Image (cartoon, rainbow, N blue to C red; front, side):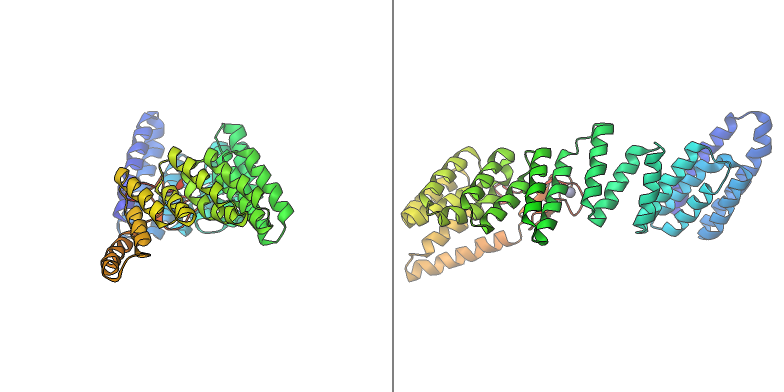
Length: 387
Ligand SMILES: [Zn+2]
């Protein structure tokens, strides 16, 4: 309760300052009433009786419609504290006042919509935000809040419409987000075994954002399932231009495609080129694996050892031990196993992905950060430590 009180004090001070600015006659008439009610309300808050305090504040609106700002502040404070029902009561009461100016009413509607959103009453929140957009009030805020609702409901078509409006009306770059929504739609279509529809969504994703790695990965998956490994390779090879940070994601499907096409030697060449242009331990290890399969253990060992000298990494070391283990005699093998145990332990608690915006880290790739809810901010880690 103390936090709420402390937060309200500036509101009280600001109201006092504002009252002082009014002409003398009005100040004596309405200013006195304002403060007596106000402090009565504060007193209830102080005594941890928020419902009685709300009664007082609600009566205040009847006395003086210019205390609306205080109500708005109080309502949003209750919401931020998680006391959503109280926030809703305050804002609903405000909206019911016939004396409210248009601007105050739309502000109260925006607040009430956010209360509903917080309370999980998504339908009610949605219709309030749509009303605001129709009336051309708080359009930017309302669109962002609608996006929040549509994402929660996984209503990607509506999300696309709102995000596109944000781009047209306010110049916000929502292309990356919209492409993700199209990818979500493609995944839904795939879940319903509608491959043709999925292809259309993927095309729309790439039309919106040509750097949509996710669209390329889904396209490659679909092509592999259909047995078209050449098409899958074309989709996978796009990722280098789209966002080279995601190259570790293409290694497994790439290996599958090249091996089904019987083109392992081409894979070595491709990985060699990628590895020379992008400093990435996952690529280096994939190349080591390919070398090992193609030319044997000795080649792979030499390659990893040379790489480790340039760029030491636990994962590289772990890999080298694994290659050595395959042809070690019994005594060396015991020692290697101890080392391998150590490197495995060092790696097992390391996150593989992290959010570039909020620092969230985890072992799975999310296209939308579970923590800050932004899209396209999670990347595979590739530092020496991370790998
Ligand atoms: Zn984040």
